Structure formats: structure tokens, C-alpha cells
Length: 520
Image 1 (cartoon, rainbow, N blue to C red):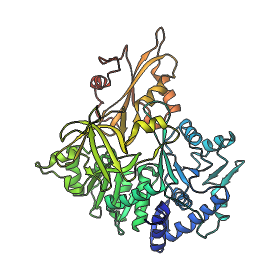
Image 2 (image 1 turned 180 degrees about the vertical axis):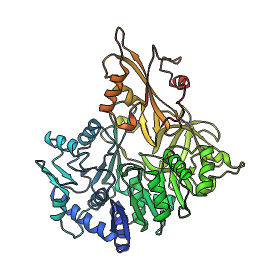
Image 3 (image 1 turned 135 degrees about the horizontal axis):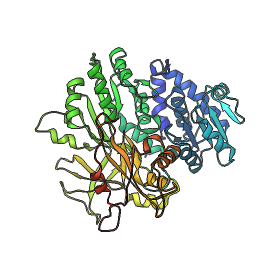
């Protein structure tokens, strides 16, 4: 046995030093070298130590894509603290809940999210410090520039062990509030190394990220840093900007969801250019449609790689490689799969009795990886239900073929994937039922030409009440993140039921008439 400290710091520190003179990040018009990021994160880490942060201490990162997010991420890693990443698309209510439930003691926020953090600070719960990336006059809120100015450039001292909590990332629940998915340092280090293997990011790659760092993109950024790559970081997805970056800055690596790829293709059809620098498009959340893949291969070449994972086993449970993305009719069926198990993962299909299914027989997808979560924060019952005998029960329904390619058929846990983001129907239904006049609500995902799936709500008025779809829409706008809000609300007299008395959501999906031409 070895006493080598297996943690994120040991993996990333070596890269920061080894590639010190290389450019690491381009964000908001500034280029940061690896040495720049190292120095700035040392300053912030030492300042956080003075605020009581150490191994496993929850620190909330409440920022849009920016260099400050990257610096804060590295500072948290250097202390072995527990990162609590909050997507800037969260509603104020969701963000406040996560701050409270995680027990975050420090929150680092940008101007968009500082109000939520400041209100939580005023409650005098666990949160005792808020740092804002802008200049500020808010009482009790510290300015980023002042905090860094007071921190030493020397590497911080932290005694990190592989069992310390390194990340607490929140994911939606089938009912009620989000759940905190807890990962420890040793597993996170193995996950980062698995990303190096599965993504095949090279030192000469130029990665462009425009999806939120608190989500899957954050793992890709860390992977690029370990490889010595250069990352272009954008706050929002802009198809024209991406194509320009490929052509003029020789961006070679993209990370996207299919919706983004479709928009990129539409833009490229309008403004053809030289996209030969592009070597890899890594995508997840859903397969690419056959028609659009044919178009994409013709436009960009054989550059596509698909991943399948969950927050509970980040990003890589399976992988569909480039060679499987083909127009060859003899192998085209592989495109319906999400690939074979990743290098540090096993996949099985279990029936209702918990017995393993033979190839071709559908059941629940379960996985065992080197980087599966240790559990849900303060939710032992949910943890016990999801983790059984070392296997992660994904809630997805699918089957394996004779070559261990995984085909997903349905989602057991009522989850919708819209634009690459997970939406749990039960969570949205709970919010809708808060509206006066609502008796019942059923939320489903229906096929959408741009988003893959779109959230649609079917609402029944309470007895002797009138239901106003505009009131439902306004309440959802107040309580839910934009990507969780229904794109359509249908008032119906009743909801169809299965033979077991449950709402028949499959039937509801079939009643959807489809979207008007040109809908986005």
C-alpha cells in the first residue's frame, strides 16, 4: 500500500507547475497562463484559510463562466474543501435552499447571484462570508480584489485525505427539493484521470466551453488543465462565435449537447467556412438524430464522441467513440446506443427482481464505477435506494447488446432532458400545485425539434375553481429555473390513469399535437 494522497490537488498541482509558461485560459478578453492561475488560486486559498476553510468545508461557487470561477475552483481544490457549485440558471429559491442545505460557510458570487447569498448571510445560519467578484458597498460582503490582495502567493497548507468531501453537487429530485450528490477526494481524482482517458484531450488541443461550469463542463475544464491544453471560456453559447473560434483561433475541441450541435449546423449552413481545425465534438444528454448526424459528418467530419453519465457518476458510465458515428448502414444501429462501459465502469441490466438480464432484454441500468458518489447529503433513505451492493441504480431503462453497447429506452424516475439539462417532472408538478385553483398537474417531456425534449404541463382545475394558465406560468417563472419552466401549459378536464391508478404519462405524451413549424 502507498500513503500517496489521492486527491484532486495532487493531480492538478503538478499540471499547474509543469505547464506554468503555457497559456491556460482565455476568458473575457484576457489570457491567463498556468502560472497566473496558480498564483491567483494560491492567494484566494490562503485568504479562505483565514476564513476557516479547510478539508471538507463547504464553499459555494455562485458564478457564471469566468476566470474567477476557475480561480475559485482551483483554490477550493488546493484546500481539499467541498465545492458546492450553483448554476446561474437556478431560481433564487433553489439557490437559497442549496446554500442552506449544504451548510456552505463561504459563498463566492458574481453580481447576478450575490443578492441571494447576501440574504442568506443575513439569516446567520452556517454562511458567514460572502465574496463578490465585483466592487461592492454591501455591508458584510467582501470584494474579490480585496480578498486576493490579502492572500499570500505561497502554496496553502492543507492536510487532505482521500476520504474528504470534495464536491457536493445538487441535482433535481423526483419530488421536492434538489439532492446534494456527495463525492470524496479519492474518487474525484480517479474521475479526473478517467476523463483524461475517455475524452482523449491532448496538450495541443484548444477547448471551447460555453455550457455552465457548475455542470459537466467543469469536469472538462479540469481535464484540459491536467493535459496542458488551452481553454476558451464563454459565458453563453453563440453558434456564430463558436464557428469563428474554430476558423480563426483553431479551436479543436467542443463540448456540447445535441441542441447546441443542431444550432451550430444551422449557422454553418448559412455561413460556410474552414472548420478543419476541429478534431473532437464531445456530447451527451441524448443521441444525435440520424438525419442531423449525417449532416454533421458531412460538415465537420468524423469528430463526434458521445458520453453517458450522471451526477452520481460524473460524465463517463459509457462512451460511444468516433468510429461508431458512421453513415455505414451495416453499423448505423450503433448510433441508437450511448456506447460501451468506460474504462473504470461496469454496466449491468437488472429486472424487477434484481436479476441480471441477458443481452437484448430490457431492465434498469445499474453501474459500478471507481468514482460513484458516496451518497446524498443528509438523505440516507434516498442513498440506500440508489446505492445497493456497490451498484448505482440509475433509474434509466435500457438493454445491452451482445457487444455490451448500451441502449437507453426510457427513464424510470420521470426525468426530462431539455437542452441537455435534467428536469424532474415531479419537482415542476409540485410548484404548479402551489397555484390557487390548480387541482392536479402532470408534467411530461415531449419531442422538440431544437431542445430534444420540452417540458409540457397538463393542468386540471380544482373542484369548483377556475384555473388560470397565465397564473401558472407566472408562478413557475418565479419559482423555477428557466430550463425547468413549461414551454406549454394545457388546461384539461382530467388526467388519464393507468390500471394501477397512476397518471398515464405515456398516454399524455401521445396526445401532444406537436409544435408549430419554426418553433424554438
